[in-house]
Length: 423
Length: 168
Image (cartoon, rainbow over all chains, first blue to last red; front, top):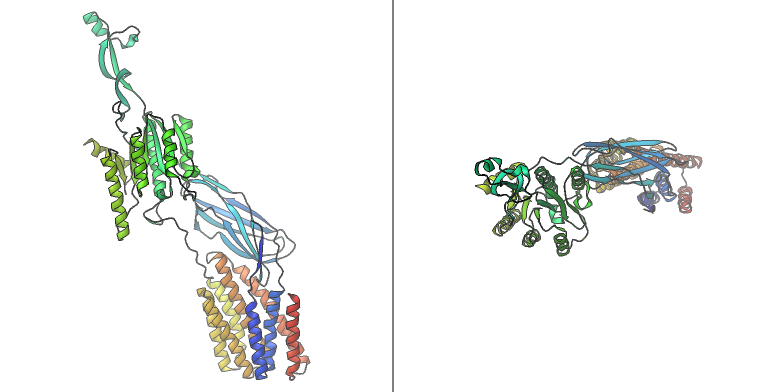
């Protein structure tokens, strides 16, 4: 930002006082009042004579930790030194706290006077939130001693915080049965190598020796081969609704549904990873976000980092326009043809409903996990509640399972849903 | 469901700021002890200036300034000695200026921030300028033999105004 200077007119009132006192003094012939008006004239003159201060400051900002845990309190200490030759009688500082962080204690603002070479220090606490946070420059307003001439500028200080929370406890979210059979426990009805018995068939040349049923061969004299249930890993893409509609919350101070969706993504990822599935992450957001399904420790670290710091999943919504049809079309091109989709959305508008049905109809079976942001209360709130329930019903009628996540923990919600589905 | 909003900042000055403003105004008010009605007006002004600062209300501060200066006018008409009149004027004007500064600081940095030093520095400079002018004015007034010719004072005032214009 280029420095801005302006006159505040803080002493203009003194001119009025001077005129009033002098006028009454002349009218009443009181020399004392006339003399008193000189004091007001002097204060007004002081304001008029004001020159714009040109502060020369060095600013240092220190944080107690640059890689805090979630909800951890980070103390930010700002030190400002007057490097100029002259005294700065009126300095006001506003520190550039990232929008995504909240100040827990103290104030990121400070006002003081600094003699040449003198420094001042102020500190405040912020509560760390998931994501990568860059501090904005320190905003400085310097005024002269009469307060009439102001100089606005900012001093850039590079400070960054990165908070990458651990992935949550796994949740065993079952997948949809596919045309090839049940993928829920990642076993297919085809025979092959594996651990669970499937069938016995006639020996064919080339069958591995350890799968020949020797007991049967000894009894009957003919070779036969044991087949086991062949296990196949599924491919899953967790899709997060990070449009503006994904950033709703029950109350102003509550977590947004996107935060809850990210918890779902982490829990589902961990759950599916443990049974050997390949899991990817995508988001419906103005910014592109796609991590192809994969396995392994490196992929897990990438998922953890993406869920914490990706710009498409920032803790505050992005202002850029979201072109739903284009994004959905691109997503459907990106999805592997055998991939299942776990769609995390609060279901507060019809676009989420249409997207779920469209992806499902395109051959990628969809399971919807919906953190519930609605509350009872006003008529409008109840209406939103009913509309959302109707959307859940519409999805279920279309054969898409919906896990409606309310108050309890996600893991418990999934366990309850599984019990209900298998009953 | 609600959107994400910024928490509002409390822009009222602190109680300490109000105490500084009230103390300066009180010094001015006590100088008017020679006239009962002037004293009452000036004390009312003190109360309004202090209260207006504490509650962050520019309207109350303006009312307080009018009351405090009204006390000076009433004192002048009632014939309070010129020295005390000057002390009362300095007190009223500096307190008013400090109150405006406190409101402005509150607006910029809020109630939770430490802004005491910016206020005291500002009030100190204003007090210095006002006291110096009052002292000089009184010396000129006294040198002119008690200031009986009001015309000389009018000339002094005109000179001060010209100086103010030239300084711009």
